[in-house]
Image (cartoon, rainbow, N blue to C red; front, side):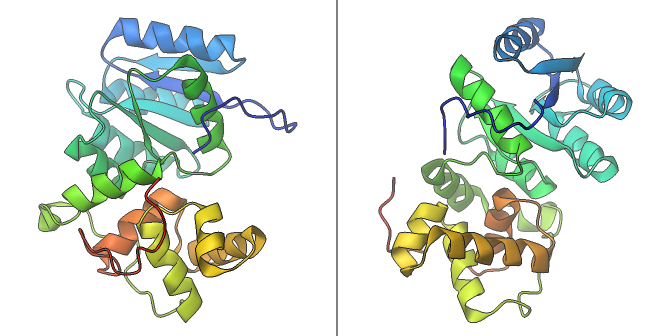
Length: 240
């Protein structure tokens, strides 16, 4: 995952809403994003407020705390993405293995950040998800999904799309490796392909399965049984 400042590609800076029940967190994040040239267009102290602010402001990215009063961040994420599917939600958490994070990814969030994130990483992360990528460090992704994918399966929302028959054998292979948290560079090296070819495969997988980003691809790979928690079969790349 790229954690440094992104180059100026001519793309407009994302408009952001911050939802957290701690005013100090909201203020700190607002100041950090403003120093990076990113506009915070709204704030919310709970999930219900977050849904209302998103409806009014139509931001590109929402930084959403998981644990908030009234309506929690998980339910707020479901409501936001149901009404504004083009919006990107990044969950804020104190723990990198909070079990709610997995549920948030299943609900459509594009990743998560720890609240002690560095200023540079916060700014880069917001820009990253705004481009359509997922904010998932491969090593954390594997630990997170392997720990919680098999827990309370019946209590979670259904997978985004369970029919993998539309995929070619190569695309299935790529999806299984995405499910293990592999980056495009690792996929290219492990499969003997160029990164451009890998990107083409990934794009076709997303289109065929109606996936928004790598976060949903990871969840889908586990929920369909393509990759099993703790399974290292085909795990041929270094765990970095």
